[in-house]
Amino acid sequence: MVEYRIDRRSGVATYLQIVQQTKQALRLGLLEPGDRLPTAREVVAATAINPNTVLKAYRELEREGLVEPRPGLGTFVRRSLARPGAAADSPLRAELADWTDRARAAGLDHEDVTALVASVLEERFGKTAAPGERGHEENG
Image (cartoon, rainbow, N blue to C red; front, side):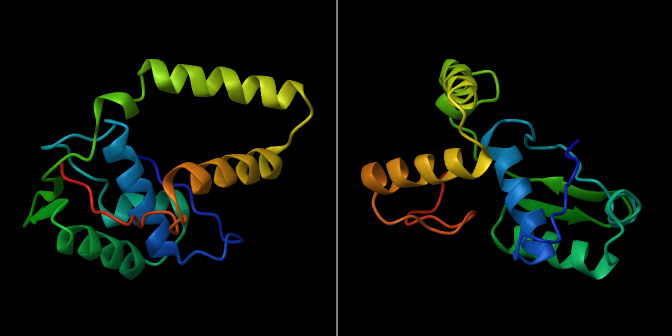
């Protein structure tokens, strides 16, 4: 099950953080079709946010066809966004983790690495979209 981490200083709306983190879990294969998302009550208990914020995020995910509510049971994943190269246990992820370790050893901090990766992504993929947005929508 996914555990949401809310960064109140990020400038990103709380419900969007939940949407983005859910999509990330779907891309990494951490959530799969049939998995139940945490209930609004569970998310509120873990993050101290308003239950309506959680429900707004889940409605957005439902609108995108990623999840479906089942009355009395919860909200369940309908489709995956996972691709073989992006799985949590993929060789590409291991290579990226090794690269990140080298960057830290070279003295780069989180912001340095984020800027460097963003610049390469922009160079290789074109104009960057905000997290959770893409020029072409995923086909699960």
